[in-house]
Image 1 (cartoon, rainbow, N blue to C red):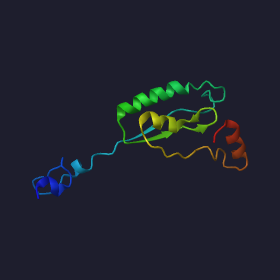
Image 2: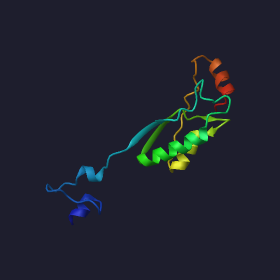
Image 3: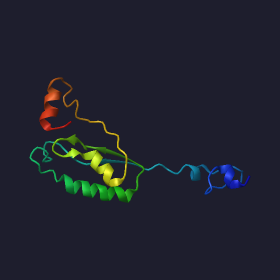
Image 4: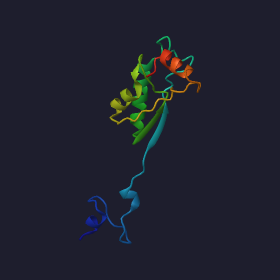
Length: 123
């Protein structure tokens, strides 16, 4: 058995001690967090002037330059007006998506939360 087969990967080799180098076998995981500044009282969400298309194009361009393995986004909603923003971003970047809405509990008081979330158009 040669050094490569003992490491279990053809591109890896044993170091001087006969052990696979951990750094070669497990490269660093690149995690990025990004706030899309999607909503808020003055964001233009309610009057349709969010410039979301331009912001998503910019976010896609910048995130591609960072070459992350995982991206966590904030203020990226799934709404009737803009559709599923995280899904759109993931599709553009070639990522899989896991989504959890942050707008289920705006005030923490049911049924007010349900009414507010519905009026704002979030799913």
